[in-house]
Image (cartoon, rainbow, N blue to C red):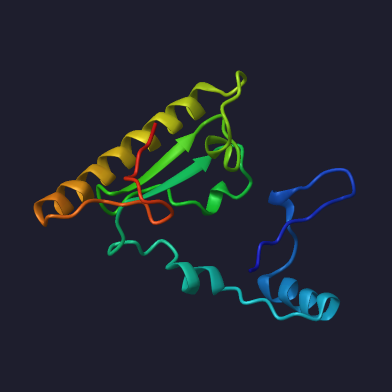
Length: 145
């Protein structure tokens, strides 16, 4: 995966990358003896072509250096991008902390509400068909506290 960043020994400077994609790839081949695939992330994970996907939450932290590549708009009502203004990479997926910013608390609540709704829809569909929604790791039904 091609993710050019630079460093001067004391800090990382994402916005000051020098050179072309070709020169960056050439240096990786020369120095690392590996061949980066600059379009791999798009071909492997659909890029942002999500028209046929459903029930996905894209959690983006504004303090996350990777957020510029995040999904921030939705092609459908079941693709939900969440922006945590004061959040970083995966902060909403970690255990609660008294120092969590309000945007992370809101994101966690939104994620929980969406999962409950989506699982409820599946459970309703299965109930109409005479079955239940079962946890694949246990014999009990899914629950989200």
